[in-house]
Image (cartoon, one colour):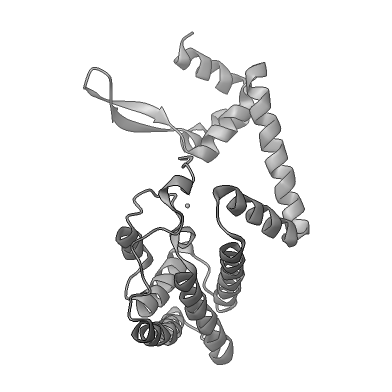
Length: 241
């Protein structure tokens, strides 16, 4: 069958899909099999899921059931946040992480959430601003921004989470920097982004000083280019923040 005609029929049957097609599916120039550059219709994971919802074929039913299940589980997690923690714990266990590492990782997630809640209270809401403040904490803690840290660890894929590749001490100092930043912000109630940025630098600085002292006692660097899981246990990526 002709994909173009199939999509045309799909859009004609679903007014919502058709009216939002420009944002769901956008043209992107790619190199075709003949070596020439041509624009083809592309969509991200969210867009693909929306398209799947409109496909009448029985073959799409398992995907629709799965989407319904994921949506249902998300509603459960909103009503009971502990479920999200348990599911995340199970996910890390399946990937091969040990219990003590998982406990630290989950605690770090909670500390991070407290920090973003504090930033929201201070009037900071954009993801870009969160990234800037996080970079300030990381730079003061480890001497590297998150993007530099990912390069240091050889993490080249966009969907690879830096903290999932940190060892115990790296996680601990990350938590320290973010927790101290939260405490200072709660104490001083910053009113501007610039003030929050200075606080982020100070909070990370506390963790940075502790890191340097630990390195002096241990005789080695806390930051390591190694990934926490050995290569044999590295989770296979499902490419789609």
